[in-house]
Image (cartoon, rainbow, N blue to C red; front, side, top):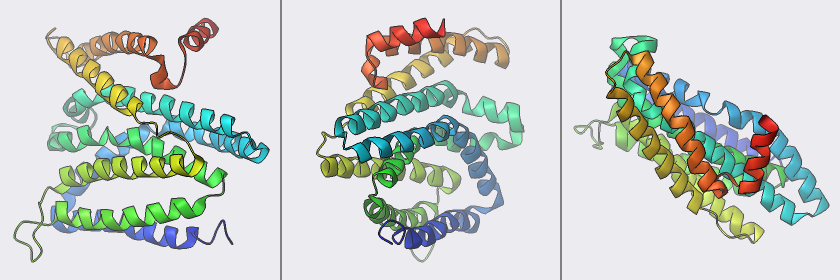
Length: 282
């Protein structure tokens, strides 16, 4: 009861939260904006595949370390997993975000080109979503579901209000911003960022750790800058889209590798661990 009972209202509010976002977008944006957002969300979810594959192992390792009372191991697992998956998320965003319009045109046709801004924004969503998944798994593994539920309920209720504000038209009884798919995408990214960091602060205080946030700023700004520079250099070649994107990838991956080698703590690793991994891969 202690573990599962809080999850019941959490599931109910979670359903209302998901329903409200899509219903309000349909109500105030229409089918076209609904399609733009749905496409952006589907592309963004691809970036979470790596996170989902790691979560079960992370849950098991955290639960085992917690059971043994090895708090140093718990903190080490939490920090290393959070940093490495965050860096992976920034890599995916940095590579694909500058090409949002081209991706829509190539995959779905020019009819979806107006959704490029929503897609570009949603490429940022999985970055902190991965941290949210890790924090949630950590709380479940350490039997702290109450903290997860209380935080989640507050933010979901606030998020539904924010959804109305960004989607409602300016001439409504309660005026909003009328931003349609772009507004909902922006809301998802910003609210996710706030919720995840608040939850991480609470976890750090609860466990007696120092709140770890510097890697977020350095990873996100550095990798996005590299991605933008590579896309601009590739477009200067004036070749076909496929060739330009290939050039961008060929520039992006080595530069990010150098960036990580210079600052290995961004992925929760040391330079010696990176060298060992490179040697093992060979």
